[in-house]
Amino acid sequence: MINNEIGTTLIENIKYNLTEETYDNSIFTIKKFEGKLDENVIKVEKHIYNYLKFDSKIERKFAESVLEIGTEIKVYAKLPSDFKIETPVGNYNPDWAIVIQNGDEKKIYFIAETKGSLDSMEIREKERLKIEYAKKHFEILNSIFEDKKIKYGVVDNYDALMKIVK
Image (tube, rainbow, N blue to C red; front, side, top):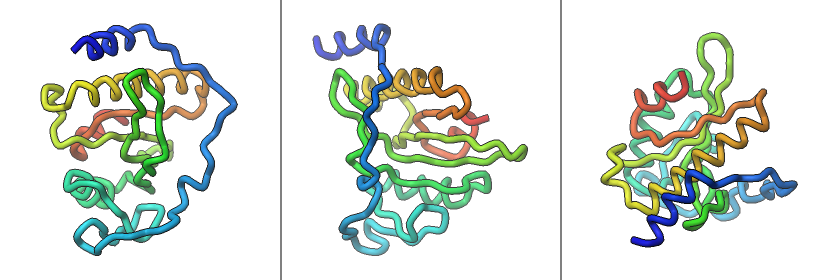
């Protein structure tokens, strides 16, 4: 409880600073792809690979009912577990990187976290804090790189995704 209060207080004051560090591109390369088709792997069209290994039924549903069907979705990737944002309450690993193209040919880069419910009461407190820190992280990136905005949000369906990107 005390850690949660500290985490909540820090959100208002946290500052992320740009460093020279970059992710090693090898984290985006599948070294060993294991899974069972239709159990935890599905064939997909818009993902960077032909098959998607998902971690939960929620992720599968989101990929099938939003990412694969949405006409504005051009390409997406399930972010690897090594892609982490450091926060005071532990590392945070968002679920998806999505490229969306709206009618005026403008590309929107979106980092998404999928949850079964957007009701904040149903999201564990530590996870909620990590999500709040991620919002701050992307706010800072967007203030530095004004030409390429990265939108971030917690979504559970197509309407929620489109509401954030439009």
